[in-house]
Image (cartoon, rainbow, N blue to C red; front, side, top):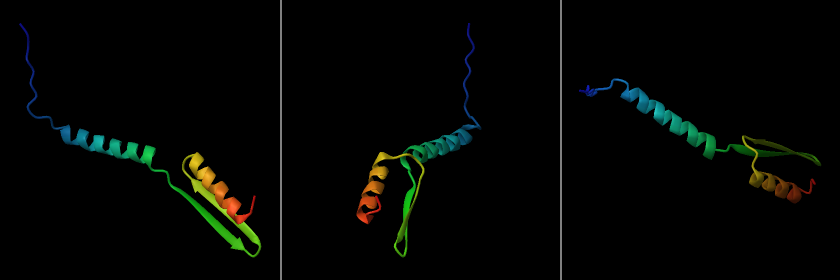
Length: 74
């Protein structure tokens, strides 16, 4: 004595698929994309370094220190 329920067609499946794809793209962008840039501007004897990055990255920090040592700013 039991009831069997079978769903033959689910109209919400495409929406769940699109939502899952958007979620996976968002996770990829959050964990694997790290936009960063360094801009060096020289004005006469003065040099300025502008740094912009999305996450605190030790490797990028060491690159900045190496660049500063090459420019003899430190």
